Image (cartoon, rainbow, N blue to C red; front, side, top):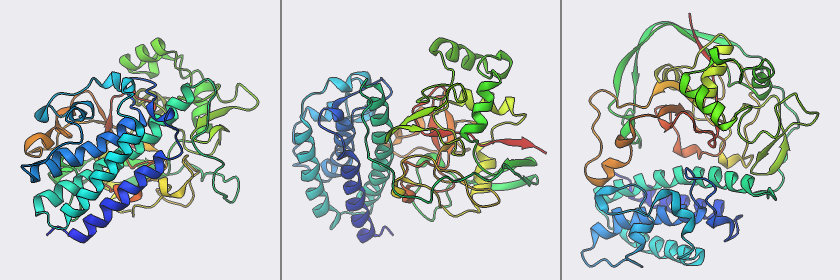
Length: 416
């Protein structure tokens, strides 16, 4: 049975957080699309509103009227089953509707959703719950896309001010390894709480004996890879990765001002502007190709998503999330396997493929995940820009292997 009151509360909370995350950006900031993979903040605000109008309000009322019928096309991302879409790479051209009009639309939809949730059936409530998790994905995209846009501006403006006070410099715990025996493990959503369709069905998988690193790779450790010529050794790289790194001139993670160690004050661009690189914090903004090359250089490999999930299932969802206000990865603390959740998304050595007997949702919502199960790699665990209540051990994120603008990092594994 769907909990109506909890969904109403969650809807209000998520929608308010989206508005709060967008608030530091000016109307001009909110319109910038700095690359085809990113979207303007205004578009994210509109698209997440479109989702609730398209999939909840419109189907529930035969007399439904859109604020502007043309917006159905402008803010439809990729759902072919409900109509045409404006080209993704041209979202930055949408100077109209204005940001003010989009925010007014959000308020109108929120008012109508509040009335509807009070009497909605279980199907509509389940779609509303899905919509809140969809919006949390876009909250992280708002921050990641805005960071890229601000970095692309020659003035390099800051999204936020100084970080919240913290106890000063922290050293990461030394890297250690935890060994796991060969075992059959249950993977996938257990049905006790919300999950996306790509986390189903739950099934058994065999994993061989392996060891997992206690924490993600740090900036200092990745710097050693750079200084050892990691970007120059073709034998460390997958062929596609080598070609992409050469073509795009990769020499360090995205947003590093200079190769770590080659300058007295190496810096990284973040949501708080240019900051000194913390050598003890997890490295982030690396592609799958870079993560894989680093793992090979380190005499290890990336974990499979089943190895990662089997380990994470025994841990609570705790860590450095967007709620902390840091907006950047922090050094690891504690013993054992740490930082499985938050800080950085961790690349897995697993292609994004359907689980055995996978069935997408019925209707247009079936396009949400299933049709992207080609040419992508899995990431696990969430990041410092993720919401805590959005994550779980079975959560499967996915991006193309060359993507670097997400908060993506590296955890090592090895055979034993």
